[in-house]
Amino acid sequence: MPDARPPVAGAWRAVLARDLKLSWRQRSDLVNPLLFYLITITLLPLGVDPSRQLLGSIAPGMLWIMALLATLLSLDSLFRCDYEDGTLVQFQLSSEPLFLTVLGKITAYWLTTGLPLALVSPLLAVMLALPPSGYLALVLSLLLGTAIMALIGALGAALTVCLRAGGLILTLVVMPLYLPVLIIGANAVSSAVAGFGYGRELALLGAGLALALMVMPAAVAGALRVSANQ
Image (cartoon, rainbow, N blue to C red; front, side, top):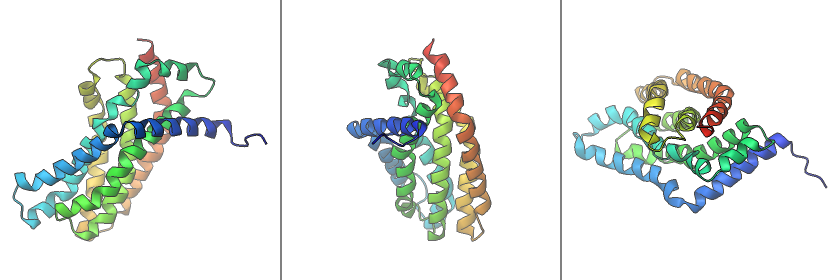
């Protein structure tokens, strides 16, 4: 019986499955962002006043800042391995649209980086004395925010993939675009802790994610075509 799946969905799933398998084989790259997140949050109370009142007041911003930095750790390698071994050229020569390949790789990156960070964040929030009322807002905002950062970061990774030391340049490119996501996400958690509604912040993050999904895959595909010809 022939496969009834649409070719578009099949191409996205194939790239997603491939990258997830590669990530599982290279577990160190998979664990590094989580370890960074854990270590920095654990050390933070040692560097400031460990009182619960102070920690609770800075927890929303610190949790979001550390999650943002953790996502940057493996961002430079998003397309670099495929660029160096020639797989990226094969993707461009394939009959499948390049933006679907890009979307599959970004999805795999988020599943192995952004999703774990969001899921473990309540455990680390306990270390910073974040009130329980902020846990749900923290997880939901990080789920949306890390997805946006993955899409934006993919554009920076595509633009710097041909550079030998592109990590610093990549950070400089994407950091200004990350700031609105950081501010809105931290405000969502702060609003929840203060007892206010945070639906507006989540709606803004959802709208940002929808816009990024419409724009970024095609933009990243175009950037890869330019970078691959350098």
